[in-house]
Image 1 (tube, rainbow, N blue to C red):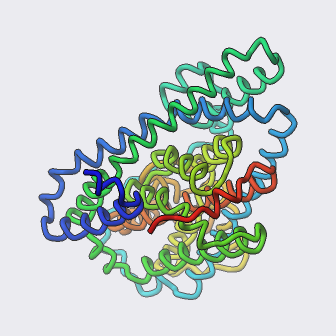
Image 2 (image 1 turned 90 degrees about the vertical axis):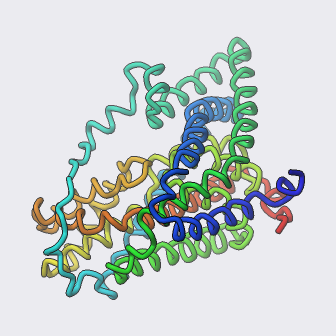
Length: 414
């Protein structure tokens, strides 16, 4: 038992991931019998999401000591999130235009999938203000929780000593929830093993062979976005930090994101590695990461853009430069509203594809065509989302003097 805990967590997770692929391929449909173990792991990490976000955000705001700093932090966070999303879409559209994943594809055999309408932007904005904060906590409405936590934290700053008992309670609650998160993470290798075995056994990577060019396009776009935008432009060029050290620090969270396909479920792990591996202080980790899990969907954005071009090519629709710009703009809005749960992007593509003249019936056929192999690609783009969240958090922490370089450059055990 002692030997198990001496192995670095990322090694245990990666080993479980590889073992899960092998067992799933050998076991086939039978791997579904151990899915409950993976679902138990997801329930455990979702269990801590709401209390962790709420108490750490309130504690972080109180610790800053100046409400004005929150405005600076918020503007920088939203600005860089939107820029990285636009960069992701651009990379996806360029690769789709070059590789032509939809050229010559026959969609006649596809079974139409159900298309869900995207929530109107106005309705989504209104939902940020909770009618009942307790209900928002119970329902796990992250944006509403963030809004109420911001108000509570700012009010504690203004009332000063009178609010110290509540401020101390939130600080203690933050430490408590991080400790619980560490315990939950020890279950990660077993949960990852079960989830990957199930995916490999019931869906299989072989499904990607049916649409190899589209899959290749998505994989290349995800890799290019992580390496070029986050690794080189942000971490190395803007922050003068080591991209290698950054990805080492982020790997635990990215591996969990890959296995769960959920940004929100990975949030506790992201917050833990941000503070312990990347030197991001609690103020930034507790504000930037929850917001990123809700609105920063780089992987989703590039995927929706690529699939839109794929659909246009498959149906013989010629796209002009104006069409590509239209896809980029609408995808930015759609990706911001994408729910941080597995497969959510499938049901939000309609809004983007309709802007370039694809009919609802054609959209349903496209979704039905890509649905069988969406899970492996969903896993990959969720890992990109989490890597982007941590990259942006590192940048904001540097700009706000909430960054500890000694922790960032700590020697990792291999």
